[in-house]
Length: 346
Image (cartoon, rainbow, N blue to C red; front, side, top):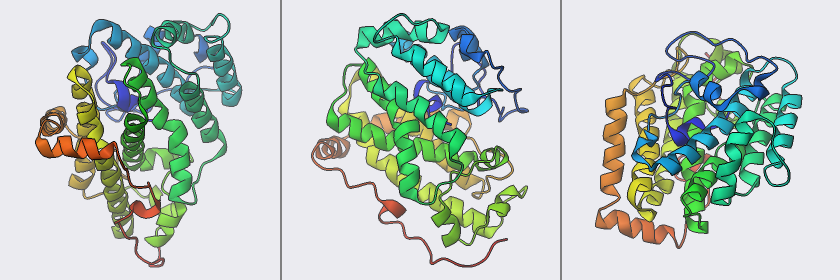
């Protein structure tokens, strides 16, 4: 699982509801075949559902739009292999990475990598962010639980942050301060996805809620198998929402550090994250019966609010100060306090 879908928006002509491979608006998709590596970019995009926040890349110039779809196609294929492919997923990921490396020293043979190569070369993108996405999906095959929030943050440096690095690279605005803020936004969006997908991930044998948090709120793993959340699980999810919102707010000054259409795109990502968190709270933090999602009009309102706020004097001051210092991303979310362990399951 990665946060790739939150970065680019729905593919042209693609579905508009549900998470890829799961169909939030429908039934689970069939596993990908073992020959998924040979899928065309068009097939990958067509098959992808919009678990992502519906930020339309149509606001972008055609060339940049094409670059983002090339990145999206790669990230989507990596994620689909890690989540859904039949056969030896680790071997498939190894083969994909080997062909990826040929962009920087050889000739790629896989269709999705061939489509990605012009973007990498034209934008001067480094291999490391792409390799990290592959590493995240390898980790998903081997690690199904995270003891601490710090452990989860390290996973997010593989599964989430690289996508932001790629987007900044495409627009030629990758600077250390923007990258750090982007990491906050991407990590927050990954946590949002984990919160929305608790039931789905549990069914797949994975739990992205840190064990230390389950213990603090007196939640047992078996509580996540219930069709609806009891009080302890709801409190646990409410804590995750607070944490994700704080991290997202810390990264929001990024919107004010870019100009033009990129500002609108990034406002869409942040607004989409806020709308998703709002949807979880509107559901009473019960995520076990299905992933709470916000309707598109609400997402648009949040995105426009972020974009307009970025133009205010206070937001500009926040953007300038963000260049100077950003507080450490710490376990527990800084000002958010966990209760003492105990309380028992449901």
